[in-house]
Amino acid sequence: MCPRGEPDLRLAAKEGVSGLPIPLRTMRWRTSPFLLVPVLAALLLATLPGSAGAGGGGSYRPDAWIKLCGLSNGCKINPPPHPWKGRNVYNGTARRQTVSVKMEDGEGVRFWLALENDGTEADTLVVEGCTGNRHFRVNKVQIGKWKNPDSSAVKITNRFKNGTATFSFPPGSDRERVFLTVNIIADTLAEGVSYRCPVTLRSQGDPTKRDTIAAEMTTY
Image 1 (cartoon, rainbow, N blue to C red):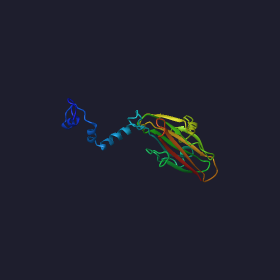
Image 2: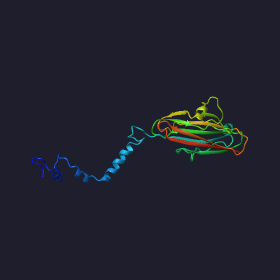
Image 3: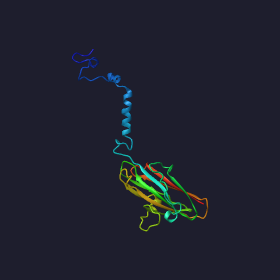
Image 4: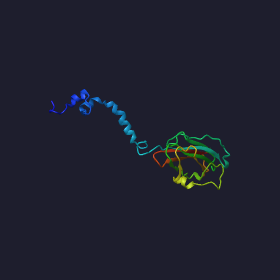
């Protein structure tokens, strides 16, 4: 029973009287918990980093490729064409984006690198190159694809080895790539000596996003 002049909410809900609140006890049975799952999932995704609902995070995706130009000046020994490796392959281990070459002791080898931004956001990409060792010397890194040394080429050797070379890209820059020529010399007379040169391209927009390529050299 209800006090005189006050409607019975349970009766009103059953009879569909408009303008009256439905008791929570009644609503609980009308709302299936399974219907809440997709709603909660959508809210969770919207708050994750990089999602459209997380303050405009967007997508960041650096992409690096590598190919062997060849040995000696002009890449005359084992010259191009060589296939590019690593296009649209993204990982931090250089798996499926590594090139290998055998070279004479005292010989030099050139590699071409391609850098691009495959993300949907404009980004600045950082090149973290290898530094060499006592057997293999990274003696020159130039912007562009060069078969021979050229005094007009822009050199970024120290920035490459220090991991401070940066390049800015618009979103989806598949038509605005940056190419690098990396020249490495085997400063050893020993045979069977190997060196692996990893190069990582890292996003400044999201430093967790990176792509690594590698060159492997062995003397004979």
